[in-house]
Structures are given as structure tokens and as C-alpha cells.
Length: 47
Image (tube, rainbow, N blue to C red; front, top):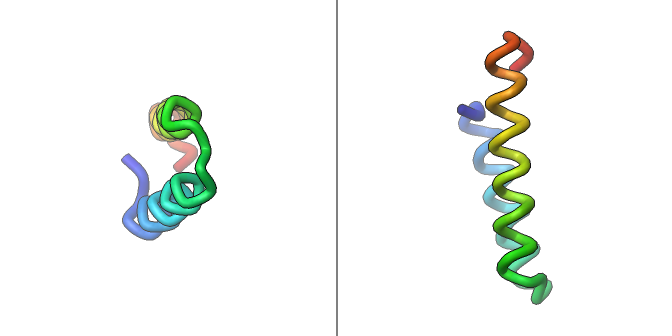
């Protein structure tokens, strides 16, 4: 799980993408990629 501030930062980034008329599927893909990266880093103690 991402630290609270990073979650807020990521939420702000997603809001910006939505406001920029980026495809909802693209936004979903980005969100999934960030979640996978966070899990990868956390599993290796690099959070």
C-alpha cells in the first residue's frame, strides 16, 4: 500500500488525467501499473 501522501498525489494525478479527456481505459491501465509497482517495491522493502 502507498503511504497516505503518495496516495493523495496519485489521486490528484488521476483527477488531472480525467480532466484532460484521457481515455478511461488508459487511466485504468496507469492506475493498475502504479498499484503493481507499489506492490513490487513493498514486497522488496523499497517503499
